[in-house]
Length: 125
Image (cartoon, rainbow, N blue to C red):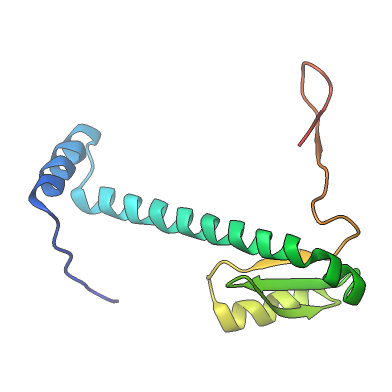
C-alpha cells in the first residue's frame, strides 16, 4: 500500500484535531473523508465537461453513430460500440476508475425525465 507523508498547515492541523474530537473520529478518518469527497467532486466536474463535449458533438454523432454507445474522456470521443457492455469493459480496462462518460446516441442530446411527486403527480427535469 502506498504510504505518503502529507504536511498540513498548522491552522488546518488544529482545526482537524478539534473537529475530530467533536465528531469522535480520528484525524485520519476525517482526512480520508475529505479527500474522498474532494475526488468525487472532481469526478463530477469532469463528467460535466464530458457531457458538454457530448452535447456539442451530438448532431455529428447522431448522423454518424445513431443508437451506438459512445465514450468521452478529456472532452473527446474516445470509443464507440453498438454494445454497451463491450464498450464499458474496454473503457474500464483502459481507464480504470477514471470518470468517463458513456452514453447512447439518441435523437435528443438531453433526454427529458419525468419524476412522480406526491403533490402534482409529476415534474419535468
